[in-house]
Length: 255
Image (cartoon, rainbow, N blue to C red; front, top):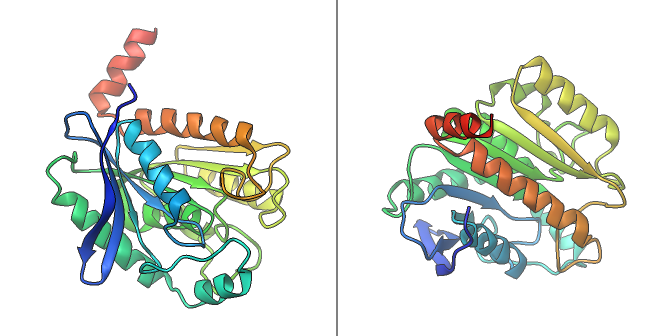
């Protein structure tokens, strides 16, 4: 996909008090769209920049603001944990559905199926979205999404492992090999469940990288791993969000 300029990047009203950060490419549409899900610190400048990265790659990117305008500093863990414990899956999915409703009415967007991409809590939400919305989500990208397949739940959120068979689209999961919050046995359980359910998926694990290795504003940032993951994610989105005929034609050209 040829890089393009941004034509629009701003917060937009979704539904009632809900809002989201929207970034659109400068090229003529309609564009394929990707829902972008925040880390546990809100839709801060980092999350906005990742929306803009997707827009420059040719996608309409919309990040529902799950915290209603609140953001937290990276060092303010007690308030972050308190906030996470206050959220339910129904609450999060309400914002997701409001964001999809907004995209469904946006003339410059190609409707039908969308992608979902998220970081940390947003990585889990990308998988939950794929479970709950079925064929509507053609591709889900999870950057170190926690509480998907652990042995013990965190923050009281439901573990998603037993529901991955409900996923209709393709899944790509990124993990850091040194992430002390997501153990290797979680990768294994998730791979086993997805394989047993005969789903299209890939898991990429990056050495010398911990949790939040793609977060450019944090000490955990590992630029080589982050950019490698993003390259993989963009290829994945291009292939899985392409119309079936276009994918078939691309395979014919390659052979």
